[in-house]
Image 1 (cartoon, chains in turn red, green, blue, purple):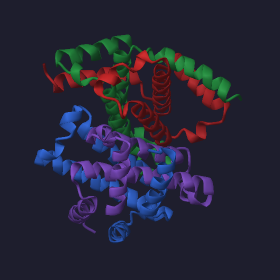
Image 2 (cartoon, helix red, strand yellow; image 1 turned 135 degrees about the vertical axis):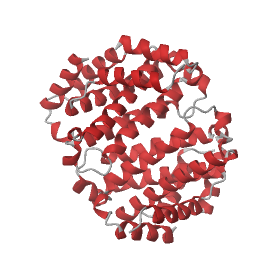
Image 3 (cartoon, one colour; image 1 turned 180 degrees about the vertical axis):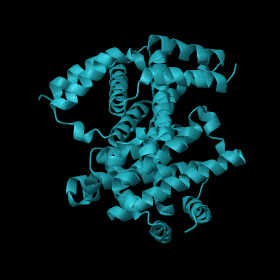
Image 4 (cartoon, chains in turn yellow, green, blue, cyan; image 1 turned 90 degrees about the horizontal axis):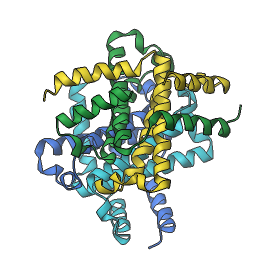
Length: 101
Length: 101
Length: 101
Length: 101
């Protein structure tokens, strides 16, 4: 993950895209990519949605959008100095207290 | 990351939440969390957005929403059998060809 | 609708909110409100989603979010000089050609 | 607006699309269209975003997405029996009490 974060930073730097990568813009871009994922599923029944990976074209599209969401999430974390894995670890701890079994 | 994915799966299983975790619902939940991130930034100028981590309360809120986005992304990948890091690695390869320097 | 658009403009002007109401910010706010609608439905089955108005609390919440989406849509149209009803009329014309019966 | 709502209902009925138009799916589609609006603005500065209508292609794209958002909002209101204008009128009343000048 650290390696991917570095590749993303180098990719953006080589294209002079950093001025566009404000936290505000990256959060918007992340939500746009998340919606492109939703778009794939929007008219499917729950059952059809469970089978999306059996169609190679749809599987590729879903995988591609997952990559885009992760790309913007990692870039947002990079510019904000957030460690996403530590953030999630702490969040699961809080959720275990909030939703006891 | 694999460890977090396992924690998330056990957390959902212990609460019998798996029936709700269709790919369609997880994609929707992911986009809702991404929008909660956007909400933090929606009225900020680009400059203000670059300083969100200097306020401890906002920093905590941003970190919390980042965790929620990652949680749903990992759970979606889990139910679909997608490796998010491999997906992103392949995507950066494609983008390097698509946007030459 | 014109009357509501005027009320919204006066409401924002009286609070000096216009500087925040750039098209970019209003589009983001619109998408955040749309996601708050999605949030109400995210874990429901299709059948449960069809019955949301039978619960008074949920009915109120849905109606409230619908109002928020419309509010930001009208404000966005106001700052951009778009007539939303004319835009939709023209769009249905195009869709009738695009998706013949 | 009532006329547009009827056109949309007839359009969907003529194509047998009603089974897809659950409130859950329409809310998701609404949020996807709202994100397509955000996408147009995501890398623009506030100043650039204020000038989007001066470029005819972008103006057309924005107008088109506004129409899509309104189309799904009206269809959602139709299946739920919500009057969007009355909902917004009531909401502005509440906001006037909530945010006194």
